[in-house]
Length: 465
Image (tube, rainbow, N blue to C red):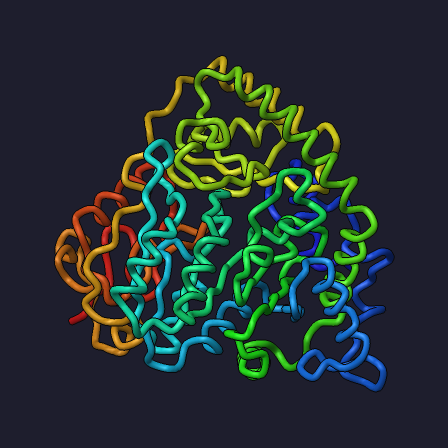
């Protein structure tokens, strides 16, 4: 008997073509013949133990490591979130300092919170046409490490949710010259592996020499939602410390259907990956050829902002078409990944249908002919205010809810973010600035819901009492 939840999920899955994660696009089985109850085991004899893998799971993770060229790989069944929590905790002792790009996912901030870590922020430049963060400059990393010699690790996101890459190879060299490990949140870059480089997916974190790399296989590859893996390289990330923290943050009863889908994804990459990536590239080439003829739809992959990025994953289609454009896509049979302010993100993958992007290009051409170009994004990502105290201690202080206008100049006692993408616009311990208040108002005026972690809401904010 089907549940009400299953019925609703099936209805949504059949309503529109998915321009969103998971990467299998409901077309490529994450593991051939996978039936959840048939593979739903526990740590019985012969099934191995994820937290002490010596048998079939150890062999599966070794196969994935070999495919990516990493020293070790660990399967994750709590998404990239569990990898980030465990990895940061393993690299940064409680109460220490870390260097963090300000455009990291909220899971990174939660790791800072739990470890009572003091964040020294790297603030990437904002791409003016879209209002999203650009690349982190290697020189900025070097300067920050020189200014903060007590930093225990560097934490970056590349590619970002919108597809922006940083020069990880140069950044890794800078970090390693100072004996500091580099952790890269590559949740949106599991498709960056050696067999994809010939098709244009270059600059991945593993090849660049990052010490810990966390990837969500489910975002762009054929693996079930919630599946991810962590790669370990070099001597600066202690495997025993990583294992210990994974034991803390990850369930002791991992789902074998999820583990099987990760191994199935590895097999798919090894057997079909080269052809699938070549076909993906051909589909994207056709799409971008059509997009270059548009007059009223800015697309990050072909806009002047693209030249300001060190690299860009053009499998991400960031369009400035606003909520009305997103509604037009839904009417044409497509469901986008994100609508945030004027930006709409469509995610592609090597599992897309052969003509899906051609149909998308046609729908967008019709919009381009009928709709005016939206102005450049205004104040989507405000520069963070001065850091008054670390996140962890800020969350332990008494707080009060005040109108947003009265919060300006006070110290924030909660996170505020749009989800997706899940990058905090405001973090606890930061001073609330007029720029934040303006950004919040602009986003809400365009229909973007902002999430508050401690009781604030539209027009109100939790601040330290």
